[in-house]
Image 1 (cartoon, helix red, strand yellow):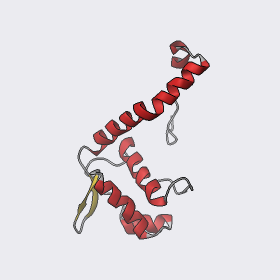
Image 2: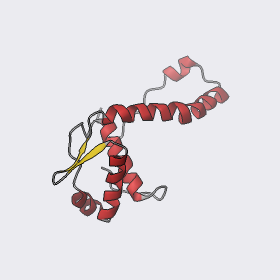
Image 3: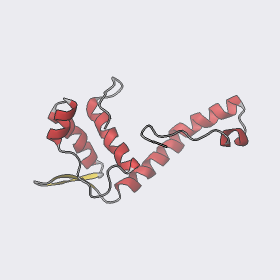
Amino acid sequence: MEQTWNDSAPIYRQLRDRVVAMILEGTLQEGDPLPSVRNVAAEYRINPLTVLKAYQQLVDEHLVEKRRGRGMFVNAGARVALLADERRRFLGEEWPRTRATIDRLGFTVDELMQVPAAKNVGDKS
């Protein structure tokens, strides 16, 4: 996980978003344990209650489950549910703005298809 925080959102929300990104990218798979609250708090020098709040949000969203005495684990179907939510959000929020920009700038489909896909930050290729 990335170790810097920004002022755009509360730290617990940024931490929650990082765990979601790890699930979407496949870094965390179904059934995998989340790093312990203590370890995350120590590694990032944040309050354990902040980590717990982020994790609780994931539990509330049914993406992870608490197992008493064992920790928190990624739920089965979490990645599929996140992908569906992300796709719905993209099509409802981002795509209309992107489409308007494409139309305003007069791009053709051929021009857009010639643009290489962006690489993920962690890609080595």
